[in-house]
Image 1: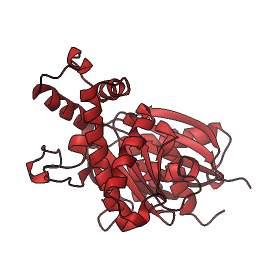
Image 2: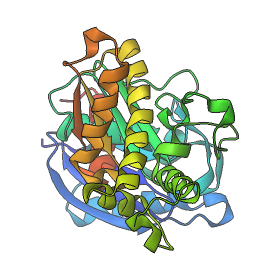
Image 3: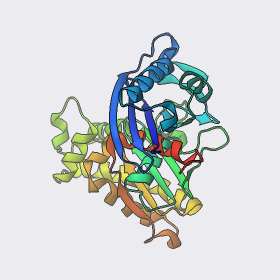
Length: 318
């Protein structure tokens, strides 16, 4: 009997669901709205109803579903989520509650970790057993994968690369986590804009960026690609900060690849080239030349692929 998997990616505004074969072929995908009101009390119920209706519409029965994987925006340990601010959740046993609703095996992971598994399975990390994913967006998320498995850590906070401190952190920008000088304060999309505005305000140097009242990371990277000197320095600082963190991670993990996804990765090779340049400046000689720097390839679908893979690898069926 042919078996199927569901991969679910829970976001603050929408929830993506995908039906897969166990070999990773995406059969169908659809979205539902994330209802965050009343502490997100209806989110799991909505997922359960949508999933059940979907497989019944496709002529499937519960016995045809090998497992369900779900990625959520918060720390996860043993299927329990410890605060998802974007969803209004406190401590929620997602695994237990969803299993009680759908009567299928459920496996839960942090959304960035799950996206990393997606890239490992069917994206730019395919063929690797160890890699580190950076998700570059409003903040910076990450996934550390060793021997094909995500490193969650003792409290589910493994892969929180965006909160790694950069040099002179105590004098750095304030982070939403309450600390100063976290990587995401200078290298996320928000951070790149912050650094660019500082450069613009502390010099009279001509720059095409001065024409914008609504500066964005995309505009900074576009200007850099067009040769704008100030924008090039901002991008170089971005690469220096991430390259520094990559060098530390490489010394500890010696991964086969660093993969960069998220909205900022749409800037293209300037991302990987700038980071790798600075990585080589900081990295231990034995990890230079062997670690690959790649752009993610699954885009916004990485989460559903990775969630399905989480279910696949945690069930006994083949």
